[in-house]
Image (tube, rainbow, N blue to C red; front, side, top):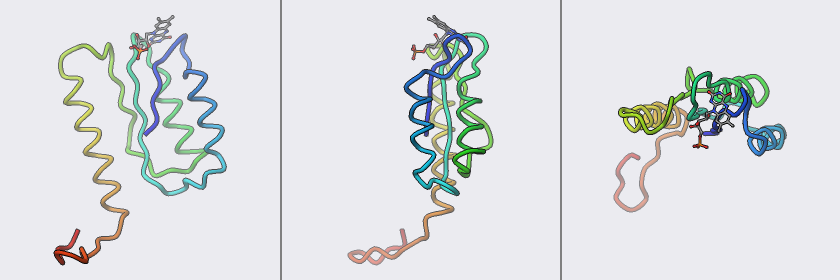
Length: 106
Ligand SMILES: Cc1cc2nc3c(=O)[nH]c(=O)nc-3n(C[C@H](O)[C@H](O)[C@H](O)COP(=O)(O)O)c2cc1C
C-alpha cells in the first residue's frame, strides 16, 4: 500500500522518490493498492496506482482509495473496506498451509 496527499496536483516528493526506488524491488505480480486524502482534485492516488500497475507491474486492487477531506463521516469504513479488498487479494496469492502445531489449515 502506498499513499500520498495531493499537493498542487502532485504526489508528495518523498513518495515519488519511493516509487523510483521500488523499480528494482521485483514487485511484479504482488498485490498492491494506493490511497490518499485530498481536497478537491485528488490526483496523487491515481498517479501512484498507475505507476504501481504499469511500472512496478503489481497486481492492483481495481481502483485507488480516495478520501476527500479525511475527517468527514464514513472515511473509516471506506478505509476498512479497501483493506478487506487488499487482504482478499493477498489471501488469493499466498498458498494455504497447515499449522505445524494445531494442524488447522491457515
Ligand atoms: C498547499 C496545499 C495544496 C493543496 N493542493 C491540493 C490539490 O492540488 N488537489 C487536492 O485535491 N487537494 C489539495 N490540497 C488538499 C490536501 O490534499 C488535503 O488537505 C489533504 O487532506 C492533506 O493531507 P494531510 O493532512 O495528510 O497532509 C492541498 C492542500 C494544501 C495545504
